[in-house]
Structure formats: structure tokens, C-alpha cells
Length: 353
Length: 70
Image 1: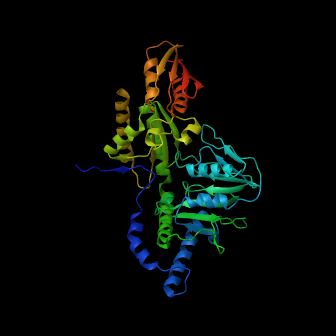
Image 2: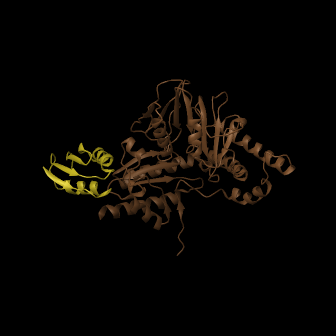
Image 3: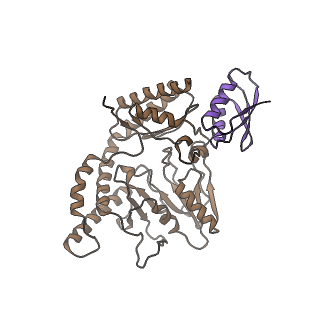
């Protein structure tokens, strides 16, 4: 029997058009864009075009766009690059573990560090205005899909973490540094896009001899492929957004009325996080996988350290029996109905034992 | 007060055991739960909110649970 798998994980395969183009892209952009020969000039041109594409979609200047071959390095650059004498640092209780690690290091260095709490809806308490305060501001949480309101106060040094939001959330007006992950629009993994706002007092915190903003060793073919994926994703998002929102609503309504004893943590148009009482998430995820459905989970029994999700715990929501359903472009109502039927019977089966 | 020892048991077992234990009990019934699972504190609080019961945290590994609804 052939098992047809429906993918509801946060990751998705590259767009088929990007996969088809990859060979040609690698063939055209192998040369170092910083050198003089004609092949390098071609690389330079392709790099510039990609910068323009990213800048257009992000609503920023193309000369402020930089690339990272290691996405998570951007958290360090975006925050440490803003540090001045007397800087303080604020981050949220629902932030990523990379930001927690940075906060710990800054605390150990003697900096004043503040953890911002969040309410039951996952909305983070706005930090008090202070021009010396660097704020790590996650535009959208990757685990719950919850978007943060705009930070209105300009007297803050904002590092905008757009790694999960991609194009879904605009940058706050007063952002200073920002980071995107190419995976957020179905682009190739292993590429971060880093930006510094004009007139920002930024200093590359990694030892360097010239005036470079980032190490600059990102793969040019991946940059070009990611710009192509971004264009394709953006077009399709316009067409599919309402359809996905309707499916997300269908899932949360079904979970509440047909399954029950469930905490619907968030239901944005493309991410639904559900926690079921009396359910072992690892067993549920495995059973769904055997039924042909791939989903994510934020429950402790799914984590290597056996700790419950700090994001769910900070919001005061149930951490056990958690499944996270990501809706990618192209998902159909039929696939969702099949997933929900399977989810209902597997939850009932586990609760009966 | 009765005591339910769930030390060493991982999520979601402590919450399942509490719910099963309370099932046949009267409203107002209280029990002391011992659990060292790091998910127990957030999950018991969420369970209480979702099912209309009460959980009081006595220490990192000890909770007092009061049945408030059937």
C-alpha cells in the first residue's frame, strides 16, 4: 500500500520551480562577486538583483541587506552589534532559546537584563521607553504563530526577529537591526538575511579588518534561489491567505466541538497550535505519522531535554498533548478533513486507554 | 488528606492519574499530589482552568488539588 503523506510541519520542500532552476543558478553564479573578471561581474549583477528583490519585499533599502550562511549567527550580530556603553537588554519570556542564551551571557557580563512577561494571549508587555535599551522583538512566535503588536516608541534599539514571520509581519518603524530566515518563504535552508537600518550605530561584533557588516561567506546560489522563492511565495500568499485562514478556523472549531478538552493556543491563518488534555504528544505524533500526517509538537515528551515548552508555559497554556499544524500553500480542505478525522479517532483511542 | 505519589512519572501521566482519581470523588474532595515532572506545574494549572478544579502549589514537587466540579 502506498502511504500518501500530508505535510503539516513547519518545514516544506522547496518550490518545484526553484528546484528546477537550482542547477542553472549554480552554473551561473559560481564566481566571487567581489572580483573583477566577467564571470564575477555576472555574479555581482545577480547578487544586486537579489538584494533589490529582498529590499522591495521587506520595505527596506537594498544597501542595508546582508546575507548570512548561518542563520542563528544573526541573533548575535543583531543584538551585540547594537551594544554601546550603558546599553541594557530586554527580551521576552516567549523568545527563542538563542535569545535566552544571549541574555544569559549579557547578564554574566554585568549588563542590566530584563525578561518581559506575556499575557494569556501571548502578547508581550511593551518595554518602557529608553534610548539605551536594546530590545529583542520577535515579530511572530514560531511555536504559536502569535504576532506581536507594533512597538510604537522610537526611543528603543530594536532587533527585529523576523525569522518566523518572514513577510507576514511588517518591521516596526523604529527597527535598528533585523533578521529573516530563508525557510520562512519556502526558500532554501541555511541562509539568513540580515539588515541594518540607515543611521544605526552598528558595529560588527566579530573580529574584522575591513568595514564589513557580516562575515560575508553566504552562498550566492542560495541567495539567488531564495530571492526567487520569495517572489513565488509572495504571489501565492496573496491568492491563498483567505483560503488558509478558513482552514485554520475549521481546525480550531473542530478541535473544540468534536474532540474537546483542548487548549487552542493560537490559530493564525497558517499555524494552529492545539494542546489536548490526557494525551502523550509523542504517541500522538507517531500515530499521526503512521496515518500519513506529519505534524510538529512543543510538548516535553517530544523535547530532548524533557522540559515543557517555555513558550506554552509562559502563556499559562497546557503543554502536554501539543500538536502544531502548519498550513502550507496548496493544502486542500479534503486533506484537512482527513487529518481531523484521524486526529479525533487517535485522541479518543489514547484517552480510552 | 489522601496522597497520590507520581514521583518519577512523566507528562501526561500525573495529570491523567489525578483526573482518574478524582472521577468518583465528591465535590470538595482534596488530595495531595507529589510530582517531580517539570511539566506538572504548568499542566496542572491549565488542567484546573480547563476542568473547573483548583490546584495550589505547595512546593516544586507538591500540589494540593481540590475537586470543584464533576
